[in-house]
Length: 562
Image (cartoon, rainbow, N blue to C red; front, side, top):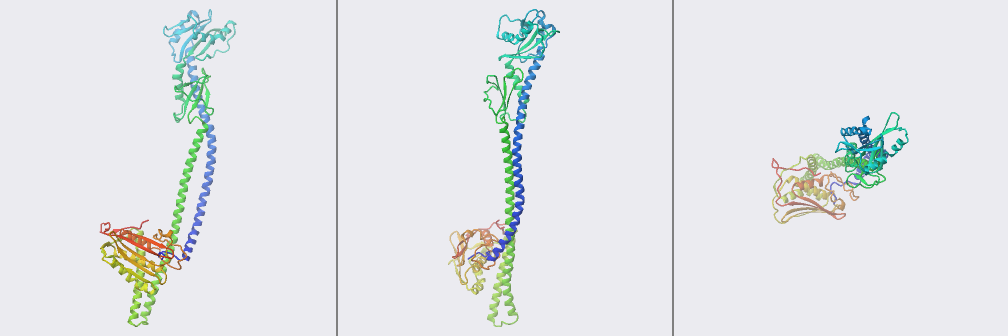
């Protein structure tokens, strides 16, 4: 047996041609969308590659500017400090008036200055350090590292003084001969450009590392940079990390670095961290952009695939519904034609024998029941589709419903040469809650299904039995059977089992889906056992003692499961 919703081979071919024709137009539309999308993604990828290259250059320039801003800020600090501290009054360069220099230093902010000094050449070269404790200029009593560093730093000017050489430039000069005592000094000349004194200061290196560097770095650090992913390291001329306090990683070749410009030109500023390599930073941005573009493309493709899938399902459903209308027309014509023929024979008086009249009347009644069954199926499907199907449950005897349904099919079964066997439970069934009209239609659909897809002289067996938990009603035939891969789909609305063993069999495609819905609404299940060429058995299982859910009117509503 094959379900009542199985089409003929010609019908299947017609549906396939219709769906394929529409699908071809759909795929043309999809291609028209996908080709520009693929071109756009390809162009975007090339643009991202070019953007990565330019981003590397721009990032390199930005990081170099960042280090340059730090170096400039450090240079400004020392030049402004030297200008503030070393611009002494004219009378402070003579040995006799040297204390004027002490009063000047006292009035100045000496942050960043470890020691201020003046070397006078009038009348003879002498070195005076400013003593902050005594607030006076003091000549060192004996040589010290500081005094030795000052004499070394001023030795070129001392030579010029001895040779009466002219001093061409009186700008600030830096001497770093002693890395621990870096000196800023300025030569002082008379109107004839002859050297008369040198004012200078020894840089406070600790103050520079602990105060000036952090301030310059914080001032120059862009606000958008992550301090945990990008930080500045400062190394001295010996490669030691002087800032920050914790040891820095060695300077790597692919990191951005530069030297300080003033006082500490042998010290190196370098950037460390994951954002310190321009190529790596640009590559990370490239990966992020590609990932976002890919994710967007996947979402877009998913939307297109979902749209295509929905459109294909709708087209297939539309084709099935068109075939459904055709099959319904055929199903309606068949019983109407029989009713018309028997009615015309009786109207024209061609049948006068009471037995014949009764026989024709019985045929008319049978076909009318068949027609009513078809219309009821369509109406039930319409109500189920709209979610308005309501079942009216009452206490009833299932065996009586089964017998009544089989009696209605007796003439049709006999005329078509089938052998119908009913096997009852042999004992009284427990009363059950059911909608008798709906259950009658479910049983009728299974019997009608068995008649359509059985052999001409086949046997149909209806068996009713029960156990402690459920009542089982099975309808078995010796028909053509159903392939195993179609068992789960035969209960779908409009589903057509495509097999070459079915020839010119029409059906609405609703019978088995309505059976499943009715049985589910009664708390039961319907199952199928079938093999090709061996017949099929549909079994309804209804739980004993089941009660429906009550609505406000004491009825049970249910919609078709999607």
